[in-house]
Image 1 (cartoon, rainbow, N blue to C red):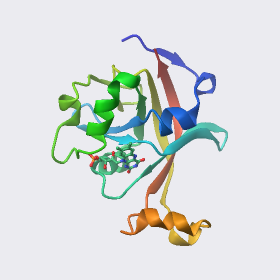
Image 2: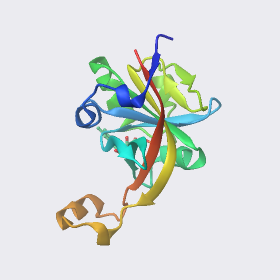
Image 3: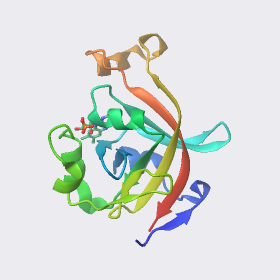
Image 4: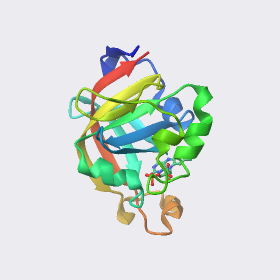
Length: 167
Ligand SMILES: Cc1cc2nc3c(=O)[nH]c(=O)nc-3n(C[C@H](O)[C@H](O)[C@H](O)COP(=O)(O)O)c2cc1C
């Protein structure tokens, strides 16, 4: 595997772009069973004196069961040739298909036992620190509640970036 380990503080990327425009796979689980989804909302930053990642996951996602069960999850970033994979993993549920197999991804185990893919160009291993659902009363810009007509408020996860692998 041709990844190098760097400090999250050395990552030279525009977080808004690599998450919001390029997309990422959020993966959780173990070597025996894992699941992933495409995500384009979230962030990278610094909290509680730690480099952190933020993701937001709707309650109905199968991946959420894995995120909630494990202490770690990963964020995997790919080059532009993986658009079809993001469309597939963002529209199919792991309840119905084996996304890793269908997308011919090669999983590997990260230092703290989470799962990421050899095809990625950047992998962030993340340790959960805080999780809570958005609440209606918290929305100052109430138009944003249009995102939640079904009441399915995202759960926000803040997680320490415990490893950064880059090609
Ligand atoms: C571009 C794109 C971005 C997405 N971003 C998110 C996200 O940030 N959070 C989320 O919960 N779902 C997001 N989704 C939806 C999930 O990827 C999708 O529902 C997926 O099929 C869930 O799979 P699962 O049931 O196996 O977890 C996104 C989908 C697409 C296509």
